[in-house]
Image (cartoon, rainbow over all chains, first blue to last red; front, side):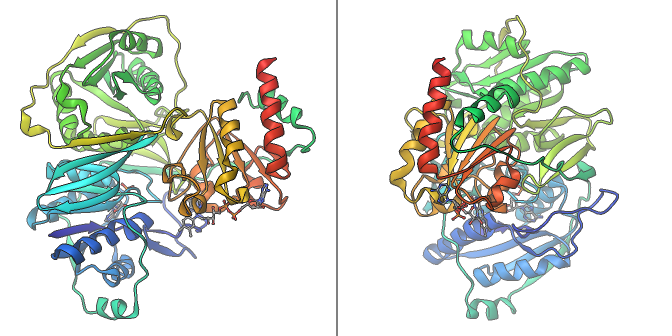
Length: 246
Length: 321
Ligand SMILES: Cc1cc2nc3c(=O)[nH]c(=O)nc-3n(C[C@H](O)[C@H](O)[C@H](O)COP(=O)(O)OP(=O)(O)OC[C@H]3O[C@@H](n4cnc5c(N)ncnc54)[C@H](O)[C@@H]3O)c2cc1C
Ligand SMILES: Nc1ncnc2c1ncn2[C@@H]1O[C@H](COP(=O)(O)O)[C@@H](O)[C@H]1O
């Protein structure tokens, strides 16, 4: 079983978000970057578990600059066998998805497992686009993934519940909470990761479908109105007349 | 030019977040001098489809084919692609719900259109569309490089139209072979009653301040009174007090209801990231220094075990009045 796991570099969950003064780009000053949580905790760990039980190989793939190598190495320490970085800007999802699917087509994979959502892009978009370019089925926000021969058994989230699904390989899956438990890389993993291959390649198609004209921060929230715990009716009046929320 | 909206449905009925997607599409179509066409795949109810005229739908096209009863993003994408080939549209609109998230990017890739996930408003005069990024901590104004867009819209992006019109009905056959379908749904488990979090106008959310799962009765009662969905902080779902699908925040679900109650939740940055776009936020917490108060519109410093039952009783009295 050969599994491709796309991983993204994102600002740490506690990072304070700021942009350059022209509003055109992200201000990385003082920001810590990490592997996108759902990629690391669920997609990659489940891939490692599947490899442990079924054999095969895990390739990590990332679109980005050399500053992404650190998170790719962490992925290798958790259990990836080798890695590919496609040199480029990760802001346009079409570009990233095209580049990743071009690599996947040129090699042979049974499964592509992504995280459900990048916490900076919040697009839920790459996996579906990769699936379309591959012409493969895609199961999004999966909370379970088991493989039995050619058939994958999955659960996915739906409004107010979940459904169980069967679908044959190859396919794209985006991983949500429940699929696996976070693993902390051990010393041996970290040492081994240093000598695992990380190949840098160029994208063939550099076109983008969108650009960001500007970034902006939300307006400052006004002060909270505090209401006395013994005066609940005041809250109800405010919710009704001021907020028009009830 | 016309605008297409995907009519996501369950058991033959169009889902609630789609209503606003229709109104959004209507406003887009009006500026493009066209109509709003909707496509529904699988079973449908005629009366339900006609009633969507209220939100701005002009024509509902029904693909009457039971093979669409399991959601299969590949087959669905093919069907929508065929429709657009035969009925050119300027833009394609989706609700930013589960299926919208899984399907809209596929359709954008298939039709080579610019995809805008989580559009928060109609395109501005310069054509850019605003969407939330960095888990609600920032916005990006996206400029499309392609001739048309696929837009997946968030709640409160355009408001609901209220027109006295009926949609007309048509049928469509995308002509897919059996090899287009590969996903088999073997079991569906849905919660009994209650409102799914992703479709709720109001959300009552609680955290570790509640001490244990046995104390959620009053949260459920409050939600019931308010017609709200229930949600929780991450540690609460991690320890199994509440199901995973109630976990909101940066690593859980992002919600944007009209009203969000946060009870016994400290307001950690990762939690706020998933809820800070709510219209009105009410916080109930014993600790006046809890960070959540800084993100709140209204706050009560007090013990949830005292405040919540009182609030519930007062709300009941209010709705009875
Ligand atoms: C990478 C990462 C991702 C994360 N993602 C998320 C996420 O998506 N969602 C999320 O929620 N968290 C997330 N977290 C966790 C987050 O940092 C907080 O730990 C978590 O939100 C705290 O949950 P809580 O507010 O329920 O509990 P606590 O922080 O323990 O707060 C409990 C609150 O209840 C109050 N309280 C106590 N008793 C009462 C009472 N009787 N009445 C009223 N109030 C009372 C206390 O004053 C306190 O403010 C993430 C953390 C990390 C590191
Ligand atoms: N630049 C990137 N390189 C590799 N994988 C990525 C990249 N961006 C996003 N992904 C993958 O796509 C998933 C969804 O991201 P997004 O569509 O941006 O929300 C992430 O969880 C990653 O698995």
